[in-house]
Length: 529
Image (cartoon, rainbow, N blue to C red):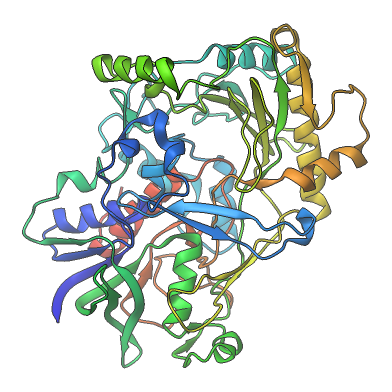
């Protein structure tokens, strides 16, 4: 048995940040990651990230049958490699809205208001183009404009403006609203995951031990406090490691509540039902599940200008050579290059985000429509539906019982319908109408009832891969951690990932995960922004 100052469970977006900060401060750290190292070319080439889904570098979580999705399950891929989500995602850099964080503070997350977190966002960031009060230029997380931009991205942005959505050059400035190109966590045409940025600066140091392909069995407790971790390596051997200071859990919105429950930390009645001895009753573990839910609008075109076929034959060879020689071209793109944030409900802040993909995109178990086309994908920014993550058994290798409750509230359904209506208007605006032959789904007809759109939404709705909230911070009885991310009632244990969000932020979640990791390290080390 080996002893460390700190054990970090999960080498993902936040886990790599926390590890780097602790190692740089001279602490002895064991970093445990369930998946393999981030050593595959598809991880580092931006345009190949789609090849990682369904590979051993992702968890493919599957929900139970969802009533709001006509009985379909929801598939929720999550990172399973060093860098976690930041190694497999579309690299979009979005922080959310200022009000998101002020809402967190009002919900009991003291010290997490916008004024509290903005300095941390700025400290994290090394922005290629932007500076000033909203952006940093000296951080470890590289944020840049994509080197390549697809013709359909420009067409979408022109069409969005024709449909009444103004252009913006910065989704992370004073006002999020508008249509524009996303900035990405890339540098010089390569992905800038937290493994390739933060963790890379301390790899090789004597006070850091990294174990990949380490499946966590349980957090060890002694006298009610976290004392270490039990994990299984790829050869089947079981290992125990102990800590002098703390265990920090960073397994994500689904993995973190699972591991707490496996360790006897969670709702007493549920743990009893699966035969796990209760170590501390925490009713909020696995509650408050939230995710961004989208419903695509498909447009078909007769011209071969989408991405279809770019990964085959001579085109694939050409794209590969261009990337190898110049670090540019299609493979330097994050594919989802542009989008929009729009207030469709008249509430004074965007409630819909659109991601545009210059090809027709399906889902797990659902093939995309055939032919060349465009996918305009609106999603609900602040869903009101809440789900749960529960254990299926006392065995760590068994999948969780995930009930996302997607589209369980009328408010969510109506918001997504408004997003679909907006997407259809953009598809019919002149700049897209001249190249889009017809709308495939929801309907080629211009005038469609809300009932038809609701049927479409429930039939095709899918995740945007942002599960959060299941170990939320706060001060009330259902809070799992306090605002310093310490697990309530369990000394020497913290949670430092997106599961601590009281409420989902209004946009892609990776930037927020990095910020949470930085703040977790601040709390441990007693430092500030």
